[in-house]
Image (cartoon, rainbow over all chains, first blue to last red; front, side, top):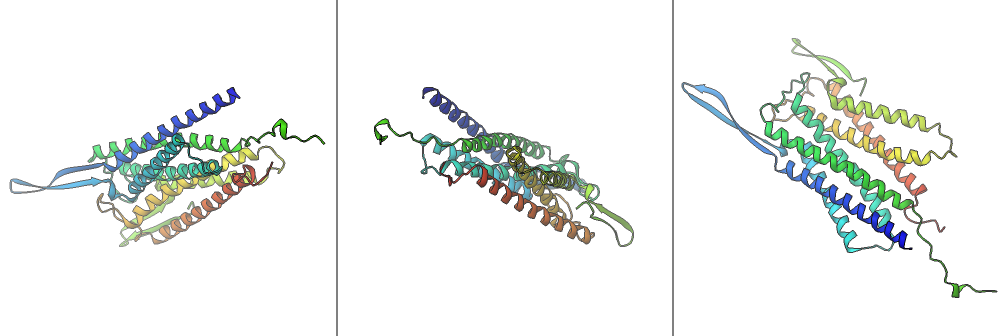
Length: 191
Length: 138
């Protein structure tokens, strides 16, 4: 029994480390994208000798895909935090915990995937523009905004990979059959 | 989506042509759905006693996530095309190419229906093979 317990403890430790890594990655992505804001002043026209300036702000709220990115990563990091908390506190919902954790982890992975891909393609549009639709690129004017957005997307991708690993581990835990309690020697009736 | 192709003109002077391959997001959407279609077609021919059904379950999960990501990406770009983004100076282009826009919308809806079907498929497979609710006694 000692080896099995050591194996279980090691598995628990591995899952805890993976969840901590996913939480840190998604939390970092959320924070970096949520604080993403850049203001630039441009010279629009020149009246006589005084230049007329206009300041334009690039915020993450202006793009719905980025808003969804922030919300999805916030929910994912919250989920991982809850799971870490329940693992450390040893909460158990009468045997329903294993399938619940697996299903929630899968939903988490799908949500993260959707969020990161929407934001990634919007970032690609902002960086390259689209000549067919006459949409100009904006990254040459707002480099700081684009860089921070790129870092947030990268962190979320790392979180997505780690979440995939966690999902695999949770599903594998479902595959293991529950150990049946062996009857005690004194309970076996000899006819 | 792959057959959405329209030629229009603004004021008869500027000629406009919109194809799905103009946008990387739509290309990704088409490629992801093609991959999932081919995979689904191949799985139809798998004999039911084969041991590969566990692998099919894993692939179903991965491809569901691929579908989710492709719909999210295409939807993000389609939303910009329909509503524009005034902060970035991107004008909506759906007024010039209405047929292309409606065909793209139909393709996105079909993709979403496919995603829902795959999600139900994965749920059913997990319920049958992995027994998450511990229905079986042995």
